Amino acid sequence: MGIIDLLKGFVIGILVLILMAALPSYIIMNAIQSNLLDQKYYETQFEKTGMYIKIQNGLLNMVASQIPANQLATYGITETDLKNAMSKSITKEWVKGEVDRNIRNLMWYLNDETKGVNLSISLRPKIAEGIANLIEDKIGLSQSAAMSFANELDVVKSIPEPLDVEKFAPGTKQALADLKSNVQMFKNMVSQLFIGILAIVVIIFLLTLNLKDFTKTLGWPLIVTGILISAGSFFLPNVVRDAVSETRVTSSQQLITMTNVIDFLSPIFGSILTQGLIILGAGIVLVAFSFVSPMIEKKEKK
Image (cartoon, rainbow, N blue to C red; front, side, top):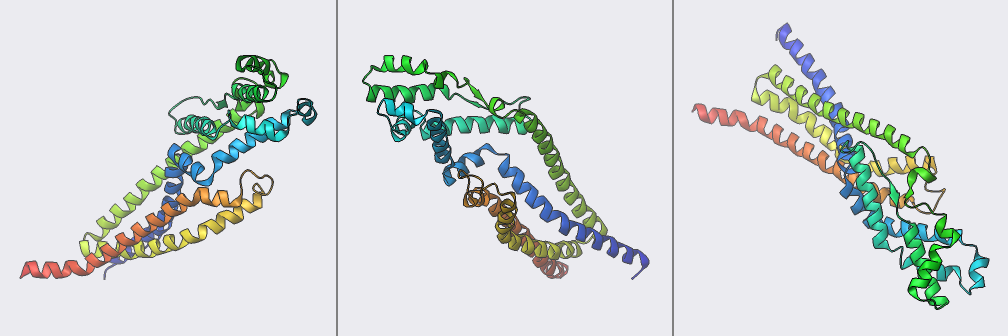
């Protein structure tokens, strides 16, 4: 074995190590990108985790908290009566439509399909409708009279129409602009990492120039990497759980629980596992081919 062969072996070894480090990074980043930047992912996971109902309940509680109990008692109305009336206008279907529309606008913006983003909900008409239903049931006014009365209430007039996220959370649009910049940078990194992995595979092939050596050189690292990625996907939920626990986000409110977070991210963990198994399978095929190819060559020579 000459100095050239030693040098080739050293370079191939370095490239294999880089490949084994790059593949897990690419798979995790690709799983994040393909899920978290897809509108359908949120629609599916929000339905699965019951987030639409939680958001509906949050809106009902918010509306109920804006009207003092003593004012309700004057008309013989309880907070439960108010929430029940509001639930007929602020329905789960309406909440789902508003949330999905805003997620769609946000995804278009983050994926650079639009230059600006509009995040808002048309809440005032729904609150007026809910109060009108309550007035109609409790006081006996006609529907049109109850609606006119509801629209004149200060609690209804005080709600901006539409209710834009920037109005109750100033600085949101700037934060989203920064997020968009980071998302574009992240997407570029994923693309560059993929190109880098392909380049490493091509260079290894050019250095070996032998199908048997190439498949064996590439196959075993893929098997090891595939096993590590697949096994690691089972530990990721615990890693995420610990990271979220440190932020104390789930313990500071009741809308989102730790179970919600893990369930919401479960498709990402599943995607990482699937890609790990694909890498493992590809490695097994390549190693198997490296053993079979010499036999095929012998038969062809005969």
